[in-house]
Image 1 (cartoon, helix red, strand yellow):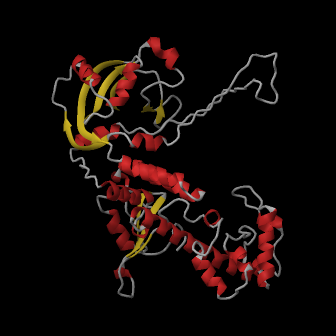
Image 2 (image 1 turned 120 degrees about the vertical axis):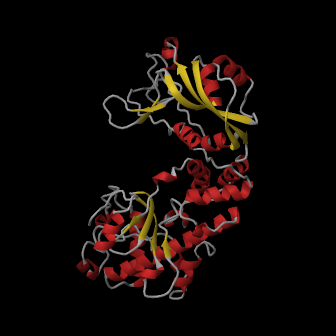
Image 3 (image 1 turned 120 degrees about the horizontal axis):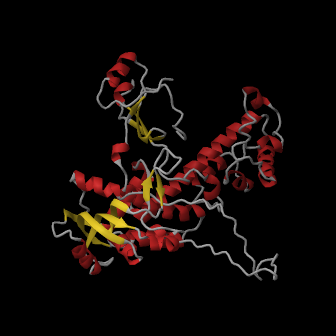
Length: 439
């Protein structure tokens, strides 16, 4: 099943992590006429595994085993390789009725327009479609449609089998047994590092750590900037020289995740929380310290720093800004109250001139760079990747671990598709019931 998101009117259980994202569809065994195990359908484990066009850009016998095996049974000519080892071309929107499938010739190039992307197919793609039609001597668009769907499915088979092989060779785990890429990547990390992580069991500790999760800053700059220097074609020597610098941090996730990370020994700090005492201890701590801290603090942002820090203030926070109704991550110059922060981030802010006013509590933990081995593996695999898919995949395998460590499982929910009125009423009466959608 290539797309399970459109399944309706089936007595199945759905296990989404949010209402708009279905992680799996489960068909219970007792609801079938045949005695079989429950059937689980998973939409996709990895973003991009269905991109047959990019994966099969350099086809060979090992990559395209399924599609070549299928079509060489019918046609042993060398020309078959060029026709079936790339994603086909189809006029999705043009084929809006059964009568279109009876048309005797390939639709014109203009009928392959995609309103979703607002693009036409290029001449090369259309010529490929013409070669396919002529080679197989199709009698109608329906025959071409059948061929297109078969090639698409067989290419997807090859793509996923190559994806499975890549995963099993690299990590020794079969992605077929996982719901999502984050779940797979986390197990791959645990298998490689052999780390034993302590799970938080103190509810107050969990809430404090969650309070320190804020997301990443996003900025849309509206101010216009124009460079004027001898390196640009429209340089005006009568005006002052100016330059525009674009900075981008490469491997940002990998760099941070290779540092010392919390591992175990989560305990509340029971020493003196006097500001002076905490500052003295912080002075002796660095990023390689065996014990790390997460602090809940009050910090003052001196007025004297506002001009210098205006472009990118320290200590962003999630607040409801003026004119909005939802919380957003905002980098502002306000003083912070009950702000949860990692000790290294606090040291950086204090070094820049912010003032620590009060320490409410500290959660201490043992730390080590236990994740670095896994990050290094994926970074090296990405450097040696043979195509864009592999490069994106190994980047995802690092980033997905980061996301998995912050997953809020309380946001998961179980959805059921129900066609029986009595069963529906029974489910509504449960204390775990949230809402209902009637179609």
